[in-house]
Image (cartoon, rainbow, N blue to C red; front, side, top):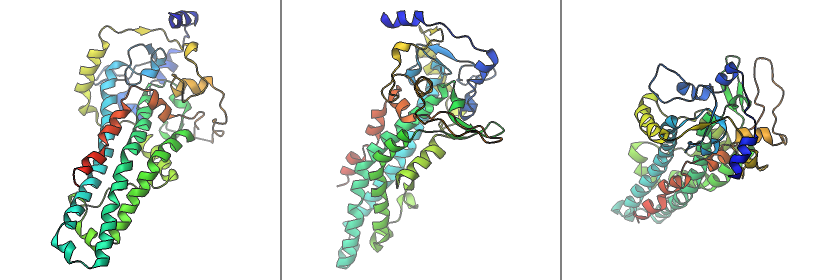
Length: 344
């Protein structure tokens, strides 16, 4: 009741129609801009405050470009990235099983003591990597969820650097997001590097060959915090939607139709009662927090000729944690300790 009274006290802000349309044309999501000529789920043609968002729920009651019809695509993009990450670690687990099989063979028994010792070190190095993988993947998926919900942000242009043709060169990511993922992926990245080094030092381990006849998966992006942050900014942030339009249209329509029934929109309001000066604990998405909270040094340098510089920094991890994506599912899907345990 108090929240609704607060909403009624806040005036509705009118916007220039041309500018409001621009607000929902983030180039990172170009394939999903509003269009009357496609049956594929799309972003809003202009910002609207809704009450029925599930995946990017922190945008409820705030003017945004998202709507329930797009949530099938958003979930599919989340699942696609999770599947990509877990598949690489599953290849690592498969390699561990192959190495274990050789340890139980006559070839291993006939090797000299030094070679067996090197081989045993290679085999033992797999377990720490697989133990640390779930925490890392869960952290990465928090970042992924936040970038997916960046599609809702009508102030997207404040967080990106653009070339003269309007294409986005980079997304300005907070150091906090990089540090969060870096801290949770550091042990996994170092353990994965140890696997490679130990395998390369053992002739027996190298003779097993990589999974499916190829090399081991590359986890070099987790070798240190700088590499992780560069990967997050250059790969994840610039490609938040991993998938094809044709693969998502049916899912979008089915989920969107189910969620739209009995739901409504509300005027473009931003409840001041929901304001919190700590972006990480705030219920507001970064796009609104950044405008409410003093910049605290987050403003970028002055624009250079021909290049539009970002003015604010985005916190994808914080937004991902405030979203409705089930991040614990990422940890559960990446529970390689249980999978790998079956091999022993």
